[in-house]
Structure formats: structure tokens, C-alpha cells
Length: 84
Image (cartoon, rainbow, N blue to C red; front, side, top):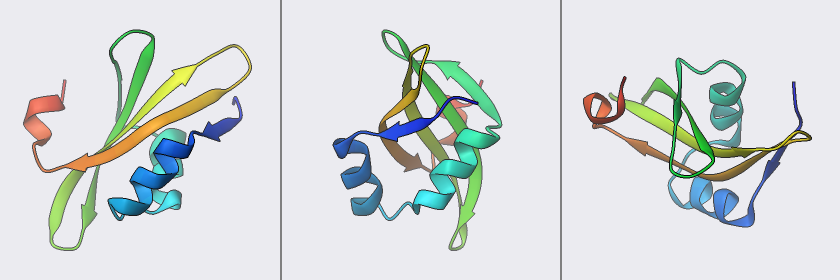
């Protein structure tokens, strides 16, 4: 498995949005789905319970031969909008 590097933006957004680092790493390690994003990005996503709701955690990643770079991360309750 390739090493993972967080962008500054991704770390700030995870903290601001209340998404624990461990949860993001869990989604990257075993995503329920991987979808193509815009440009050369991949979207790793999984449904996770946070509080009393089910959220779709989406981790946007740019992959190179050497590493995976987390560009941003967010959660949404609109699971059906993004689920393939």
C-alpha cells in the first residue's frame, strides 16, 4: 500500500468538519466504494455512523506512483446523491 500524505487543506477541513483522522484513514484502508473524481482524483467513500446519523465520508485523493495525497475530506447525509 502506498504511503499517504495529507495536504494542509485536508487537515484543516477534517478538523473544521469534525472528522477524526482515524476515521479518514479507515475509509482509505477499506473503502466501500472508490469512484473517479474530477480530473485525476479518486474518491474513497464509506458510510459511517456519527452521532445518530449515517454520513457518507468522502476522501478526495490524488494518486501518484509513489504516494496518495489527500486533497480534502468531507461528510454528507446525501448518500444517494454520491453512491454508485
